[in-house]
Image 1 (cartoon, protein in one colour):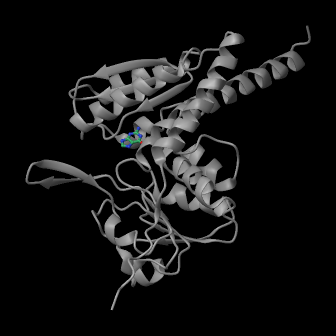
Image 2 (cartoon, helix red, strand yellow; image 1 turned 30 degrees about the vertical axis):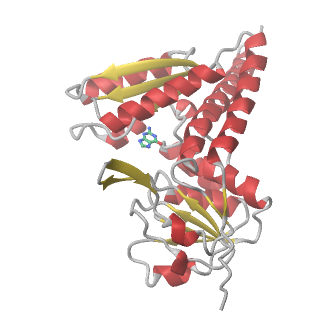
Length: 307
Ligand code: GUN
């Protein structure tokens, strides 16, 4: 008997879609430059974590490529929390700085939450500040976390209108899972969040039209977790050892999942490039929000002190 090979899911090309987003950012930067507006992003790295060094280098490089001014700040791993907070206060006060990103993780002696919440919410291009988290939940225009925002763009490019689709988010982190679920809800999806205490996670996942995997468990989700035709977004970036070195794999078993899904992000080349693209887009949004806030401040001052 001749068996027909399975129809494989198409790849969602994160590199190409991120390039499109970066082109949009570059165009807007050019328009702003004609008005003498030059958005700037400050990136702070504390310590010498090798993975963080690579991430920061890429962020600064991409910023330069689209014409966003990037300012790199480095503190040693022994820097005190007060030193980090003092630098953030200085960047908050500097009107020429539009976005502030503190690369995580921070050294163990520094309170990550205290640092995140010291950043002026209007400059919080990561969207991690509780004021932005609250705004996101309430549907107010705020800075939203970069990776989930990038995933939404991938989904919109792949599916068009997401309204009425059932999305399952696997993982409930503050950085990806929770904001992802909120953004999907705003796009009118029915949303389930599956996590380590969920009973029969594969069965819940099999109900999904859209699966977003963000758990940090290499290859956890295979074909048996998926409804035929599901669209799969793999946020995982896991480094696994091979005989010759290492390779990056997602939370989804790509070879298996693509025999059932209709579209899937590869790792690398799927979600990864979108995170930086949305960081730079957020820097533009931040500069726009700050200009709006300054205009509103002037209006209030003019009302209180008539000229
Ligand atoms: N470290 C890993 N991912 C991120 C991120 O999205 N933002 C920051 N600031 N640090 C990270």
